[in-house]
Amino acid sequence: MIYLITALDAEARALCDHYRLKRNGVLPYTLYTGDGVLLLVTGMGKSNAAMAVSALLGWRIPQPEDILINIGICGAPSTYRVGEALVIHQIIEGNRRYYPDILYTHPLRESPLLCIDTPQSDEAHYPVDMESSGVFQAASRFFKLHQMGYLKIVSDHFTPDTVTKEGVIHLIRSHLSTLDTLCRNLSAAHTVNSLFTHDEKGEIEAFKTHFTKSQGNLLEDALCYARLKNPSHALPLTNTPIPDSKRERSALLEDLITTLTA
Image (cartoon, rainbow, N blue to C red; front, side):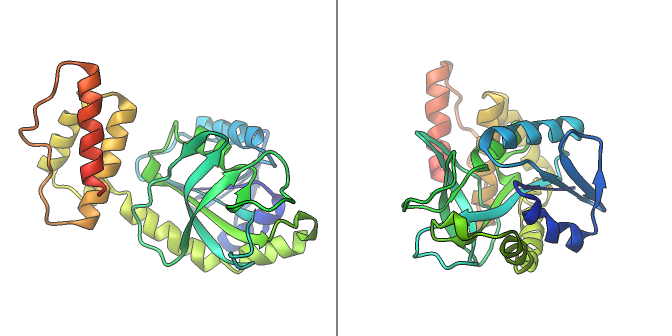
């Protein structure tokens, strides 16, 4: 299943047409469903996004093969072209940082994204939106980091008053093929079964038992990245001594992830 998350009805319009989605009234949020695709419209703002995504994922709990993509418009500095599609590798909210794992191949520019509270008229250093951190916080309770993608399309250079409903529909429609490709590549890249042998999967699961669930997920993401980058390399888990103290285990994991993602 592909979970698509937008903030605006205008962002959803072209997606409904493209995937032939129909309105579903099961939730107190705007939801469309179709063959292998769910589309949720959260409304503007981080809190609305977090609540709507939590409701959706509580109603339909994701499976290991599922993916989630947050697609929508963003304001951006003039160094970004209006209409340009961006893959987001870092979401910034105040002092907090969130990092989707990009294990898939794509031809797009990767960019940080600043998640703000109100429409941005002042120049910022990065592209901005108003929902991404809320989506990430809610979705990361159900999805692993490498199962999520954030695709943003530049709508303006910090002139939000110039953005129209028709313009948003056009921007999303112009990148439907981009979204299709991203869905295919993200689905292929996150499938652990295709990356590791049966024995390797057993070794990974056994090693993860020494850590918390979130630490184990981070390790698995790093192992997927390393395998995609160097398919012939053996896993560096065999004969790795596990320290007794929690602090030493955390230090070991941090060193291991740094090595795997270097």
